[in-house]
Image 1 (tube, one colour):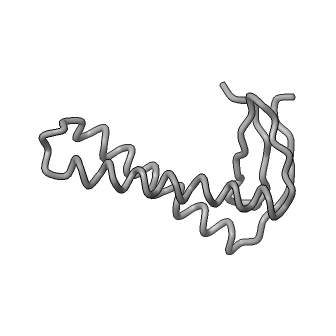
Image 2 (tube, helix red, strand yellow):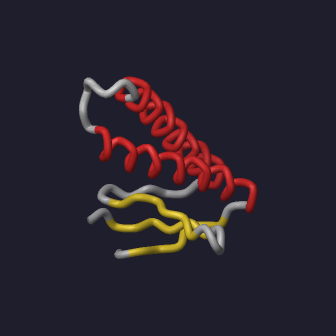
Image 3 (cartoon, rainbow, N blue to C red):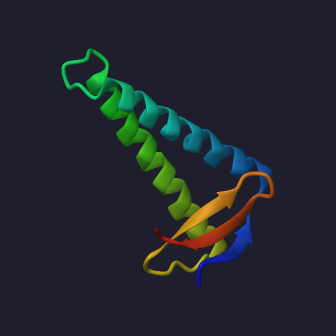
Length: 92
């Protein structure tokens, strides 16, 4: 199984995860540009990354329970932000 549609979420749910997804990606890019533990923003950035990653995972955990999505070892869920569809995709 390479990719399989498992369900669809509401637009407001999509907006929640999109915001977290964009924040997470922005923090990763910022972290790449800093990468020195002596930088004044380093500790704050690490903290924000942890908080955002936790919220991101919590969203997926809650939605998987709510919608009863079945997980498979070696796979992860992804969203198509345009259609609000959720897919189970094989890890790379």
